[in-house]
Image (cartoon, rainbow, N blue to C red; front, side):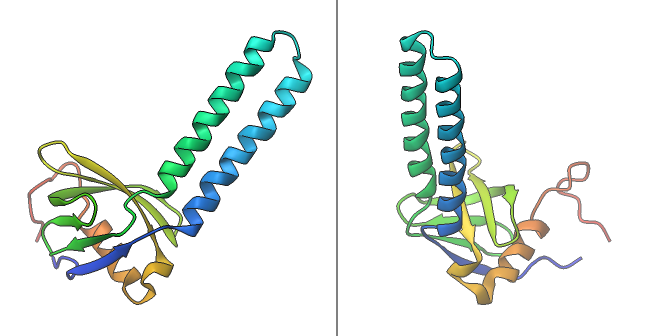
Amino acid sequence: MHSAPSVSFPVGRSRLARRLLWGLWALGAVALAAWCIQFSGAPWRTALMGVVLALAAHAAWVASRLGEGARLHWDGAHWSCDGSVRLADAGVTVHLDLQSLVLIRLCEPGGRAMWLWLERSSDPARWLDLRRALYSAAPSGAGQGVVQP
């Protein structure tokens, strides 16, 4: 069994991730507005929901900037990332795969973790190599560490 070739992929601001996150936030804002219109009882509830909506906006802004200016590396055995936060010998887990946009979590054995949005438009020529590396490096569950013939 052959492993995926080494690959280096730039991580930057993802327009798709930003649109996705802000779209979800807008749906929440519309739901909040409908809720306020239908249940206009206690003003403290409306204020509380406004605070929750503001916190959600902040979370969407932070999440859209994950890994900005970093570079992800796969050397055939381990993942690493350099940039604002450096991780070495990390494992990777794919949490959301939308074909041209992928959300991954890099985690070092010591417990440090980093979330990254990977977008095809960052480096279209290496996108398929990156996807091969992401999925060929994934642990199989039952036979971790065992190479199958």
